[in-house]
Length: 240
Image (tube, rainbow, N blue to C red; front, side, top):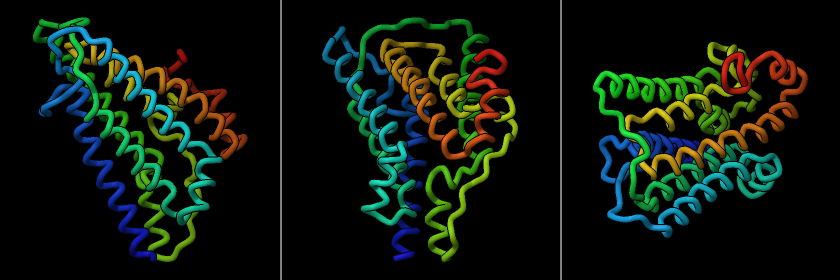
């Protein structure tokens, strides 16, 4: 049983890593056969409807499975040690489905041609990914993606909640990972219609998701987190 739980956690994490790497290329149009920058030959309302639907599926899955009542329901059906890994697995599969089913769209919103400006924008794009990924390690990367839970079960140790610490980015904003992703979505030298539909949809989800996540965090962490909310910006240092 313990070995199977550990294997499940590792497999879920491995799938996430593979999907995440492809996602970088999908957003930036880098090294993949199909991306947000892939153009269609003509305008298609069908493509817009499908893509909005895919974004809604992603948002609903990501939000519903993150709620406490859903976690309790999952834990009643499978060992609670794999609840987080199940969330990671489902999120990876839905994101993979979004990328596979995404419909090419026609049109370009902006296109930077100055070489220095292009280099600058790509640098900001890369910085966004660095901030997003590093932020997961500033809390506990392996707990966030379910490996810590399955490992502790494998070695027969009791799981303990990771204590929140205000490290690096978390001293300036409460959601640096989301800030990094927002930077990524909007830092492209060529912004196609497909890119902007995706960026608007994901940005809307991020702000809606933060609202509900903060409620859960305040309930879980109590006074320490509500005090942190009062003195730290949500996503933009000193601004918001």
